Image (tube, rainbow, N blue to C red):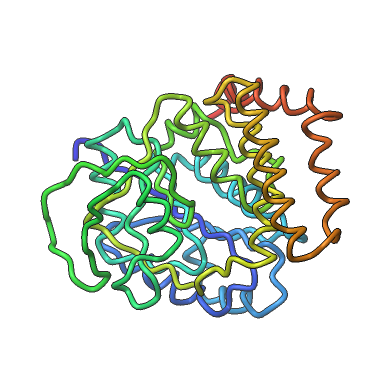
Length: 313
């Protein structure tokens, strides 16, 4: 490589004692050196105590409150850019990266700079089967999904073209610094869930692609998500707003698509919970009527150059 990439891996922790030591051990044992930034979202278990042996090897931020996924990652991203990062690697606390993962991401990003976000293949806990959420996301655009294992890989293999996808969740996002300088940070209107959908849409608005590496793997060690009341509630809280703020679409198209999504999720919830979430539904509905100018302003801001891009880094 003509340029040595400076990779900062950012891990947001919240009650992650079950995973964090293993997550870090895999990050530090890879074939490519990475600096690690940990942002703890006010954990109430022993996560912070488990991090103490690593404090000389990591940059550590501890929040006094749970900031949510996007805001906590923003802290790490800004710090990494200040320190000269060329690439940011967002890693969930319940993710284990294969030995070749970061090196392969760097090489692929250098060869294919049109990709603003890259992700490895995300496998389930057994390291063989695709994680179900990941499989559902890439199946929308990839018809012949390659077989891959966490445990078997070829060193120094040929760099393969990433497989373009419409969206991939931010469990392991590899982002060149130039993507962030163009697109900005995660938007604070999203607290937890929806922020990665919104960010991906903005990356694509600025003409970058999103891709999956077909021969690189990580393990996402989480239980399959149940499509129950909590799942529908998450969808109703985040997806209509994400759709409303999708700057790839004309405003009124995004408006009516978001309004339709809100109605559909509310109806599904009513079937299983009655009027339990009617008040929340009305609160979200306000964004489409009473607070519509706020949505228009957010769309305008995310289409423009980020302030920090003009003034820093």
